[in-house]
Structure formats: C-alpha cells, structure tokens
Amino acid sequence: MSDASSKEHSDEELGLAVNLWTSDRSGPFAQEIYDIIIDFVEQLEYGHPQLRRETLWACTLTCKRFVERSRKHLFHFLRLSPTTNVRRYEAVYCPSRLGLYVRSIRLEDAMAWAGNTDDGSPEESIDSIRNWLTPFIPLLSRLRNVDLSLSAIRWAQLGPDSRTFILNTFGPTAKSLTMISSHLFTTNQTLKVLRSFPRLSKLFLWGPLWEYPNHTSGQLSAQGPLDLDSLTLFDDLDGRGKYISWLSPIFQWLLADRPLFRVREAAIHTASTAAPLLLALLQRMLPSLEKLQLVLDICGQRRCNWVEEPTYYELDDDELSNGEEIVEAGGDFQYREQRRHQLEYECDHWISDEEAWLHYARTFKPTGDLQAPKLKFADISVTQHQTWNSSSKSILITGETT
Image 1 (cartoon, rainbow, N blue to C red):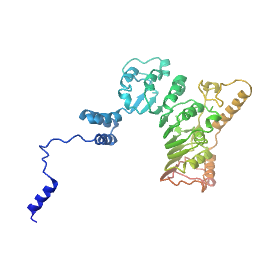
Image 2 (image 1 turned 135 degrees about the vertical axis):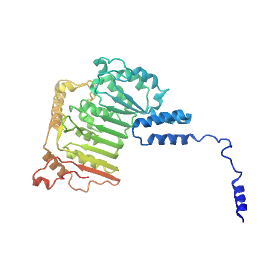
Image 3 (image 1 turned 90 degrees about the horizontal axis):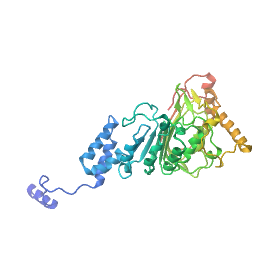
Image 4 (image 1 turned 30 degrees about the horizontal axis):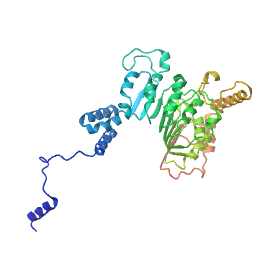
C-alpha cells in the first residue's frame, strides 16, 4: 500500500480532521481539574510565603473557577491577637462569607502590647487587654470544626469564662492542638486542656507550659482513646540557655489507662531525668510507631520553678478529683496538703547530670521488650555537654550520636 493510500485510510479511521484554530470551543474542564491546579500552586516552594498568597490572589482574578479553591487556601487560617480589629473581623469572617473557609485558628497573645491596633486606633487599657479574647467570642462561636493553636497565651489572664469557652467550643471537634510557649499556669490547667480534646490526630506541645504542679490524681486516671498521627513534645530553653524540664506530667497523662493508644509519628526533645517514664512511653508507642525523632539533652537542665505561695496558683475552674468544691477542713484538707508536698517534691527534686545519665544507661539497657514492627525511620540523638571520669564514660554515650 502506498504512503498516500495509507494516510488516507488512517484519516478515515480517525474521522474528519479538526481545525483547532477555527473550531468551536468544547465545554469547560471538570471542576476537579481547576482544583488540582490551585492545589499545585499552593504547594509550590517560593522564596517567601507572601509570594504564595499573591499568586493565589492572582488566580482568583484570572478565572472564576479558581475562586472557590483559592479562597480555601487563602482563608483557612485565622490569627487573633490583642491588637486585632474586632469589628472588621466580625464583618469579614462571618459564616456566610470568609468564615466558611476557616479551618484553623491561632490565638496569639503578643508580648509587645505597646503601640496601636491593626486599624491604627489607640491602645486600650491593660485591664481590657487581659481579657482581650472576650470581644471575639461571638465571632468564634459561629465557626465550626476548626483546629486550635495557642501561641504565647497567658491562660490565667483570659478569665474563667474565656477559658471555658475555648475548651467547650473547640475541644469536642478539633483534630489538631498546638501550644507553643503558652503559659497555662499550672499542671491542673494543662491537663484540663489536654483532657478537653478527645479527638486529636495531631498534638504539638512546645514548653514549658506550666509553672506550678497541682494536678489531681483523677486527671491522670483512666482516659479516653488517643489515636495520633503526630506527637511532638519539646522542652524549651530559659533565658540562661538551660532546658526547663516540664514533660513528666505529660508523660504520665499519655501513659494513663486507655482503650486505645496509637502514635504513628513522634518527635520528643527532652531534658527530663525521668528515664522510667520515657522508657514506658516508648514501649507503649513502639507497636504502632512509624517514625521516631528523639533527642536526650539532660545536661544543663533546670526544673520549672514557682515563686508564689500555692494559693496564688488556685483558679476557680481548676479540676478536682471528686468534682466537688474544696472543703478547707478535715481529711480533705489534710489529703490535699500531703499531695501538694508530694508534687512539689517531685517537681523540685533534682539529680546531677552524671546521675541522670547513669540512670538512663541503666534504664535503656539492651532489651527485647522494645519491638517496633512498623518503624521505618528513627533518629535518636544524645547530647552530652561535659566529660566525666573514666568509670562513667565506659557506660555512657559520649558526644552526639544519630
């Protein structure tokens, strides 16, 4: 068959030729195609995050089919602070407008209060700023199924009504809870917050979160199921460059009796000398753990220290073991005093760096109990800041090891 007849035969099978320059346009692409394009734009790596937002804004002006998906990326995150203009945000972020797209809220108590608000109005009184969240309650109460982030929040100064509102509004539905350098005042309030979020899949705690230990035994008793895709726990440095150890009550809360406990990815940076608690937590996580990052930085730590009398740290909405009001007499008072002294001792008890490392060496000796059938990645670092005598070196990991 000649080349000409072969071409003619091929054209007949393909049908009539289409002139792409003069033919009518076909219908629009499926909406999923436009969504994929916007998702790709949002995930691109830019030199500065602002460029990503500018690109998404440009997409909303390019094609009306880009608008809905672009808004989901542009307005999924809402940040509120004492300097935020309440009236403006109430008008813009109502549920029928941009509030429809909000899926994550950050409450951020800026340390620098001096200056103007976002709209240039004069700074308000200190008393009103201490309760700065109260005017936002009508706006926040209209938002649904959002994750929560607390950044540099001074929990006690929010007042009991605002604290209760946060826990009751966001706790039952939030899938992610992040707390960074937030001062939750006491272990009682810290555990109360954690217990109010039963459906978490992501928990990120960067401390220290508390100053005084006053949690009840009931707060560490049987808990609900905990199924985490991601768990991050970080001790933080104080102003003198030393780590503050505050994670022990968090370890105890995680180790409470639960019908389900599962963690897929964990990142822990700890200065805690509580080696048995950490080992118990690892043993409990390992069966489901797929990724582990662990940093032991025991040297140069200090404990959380309180400077006021115990009564200063009592809040009206503290949780009590029996769920009743405190009776300042009889056996109840005596029990509370004994428990207070016990918690203070546990918090203030200090052992030397060398003792801590010896304790870790004994606790984490080779054992067949640490089985991780699903583990795909592990990065374990041990940081040691000083040299001890030769008898100690023989059983300790020196330097930094991965």
